[in-house]
Length: 334
Image 1 (cartoon, rainbow, N blue to C red):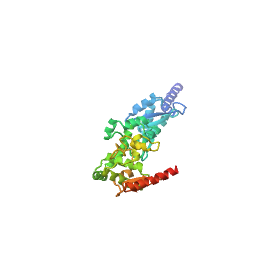
Image 2 (cartoon, rainbow, N blue to C red):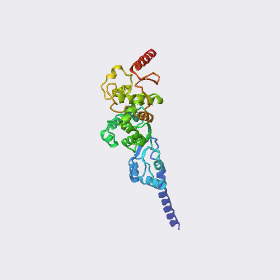
Image 3 (cartoon, rainbow, N blue to C red):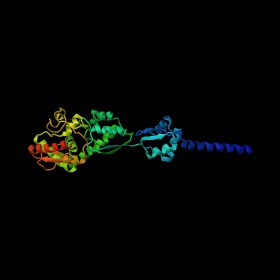
């Protein structure tokens, strides 16, 4: 009886240890170091593949224990994304983290008036993508064709807002969703009807709105500035917009010189009649609405007061007097 009792005790002990082993493996981390490494779960990846990859990358002690934790505790739920996993994390914690979707998100804030170069810098600082790679993608003909954009770049199509990016999504898909916000806005019946009344398409409206965005410092002046540009377009006059010259020269970090106004670029609205080659920034909703609904006005000119406001004039003589006056004041301050 004693031998039988010992055998029974041994068997029971072994069974208990075998039953407890997965639990021990689940709660014991791979190491003690807090070194954090990213692990990306792509959309549509099967649970078995995720478990195998975690084991192969030395994130968990056993892929089978990870499967048990995921299935038994979280019904196999895994949210795609990038996860910051440290060696000090147990299989149990990793399964829970992925089930909750506790992933790394990258914030991209596109501000009204940002151009592609500025957006590229912001994207790089946000660790989403290299600036040069972004600019290459933003001008990629195949990518633009996929979005239905006939222009040479994404300039003007990236709707201002704050967006959150997770690396299970491709950057091209991420940018496509942002551009889709612009298409959705212009697809409204009211907007389409108004564009038809103005004989303008979306690209032309974005182009004009982007110039208004860069010219107007005050919201209340946007529709007046729009009226000036609409009247000039109707009369066949050059728009004479400094921001387009700056964009064409990419002279974003210096003051515009008089010689720059003669620059031969497809964005120089002092030399060209009509709209420039394309948008020069991402315009705000209010600038787009100003381009669509200009103020009723006879004004043909405006000049900056050097304080964010403008003086509007009907005649060139009146305009030249204002230019001389405010240029003299600016020189005195300098």
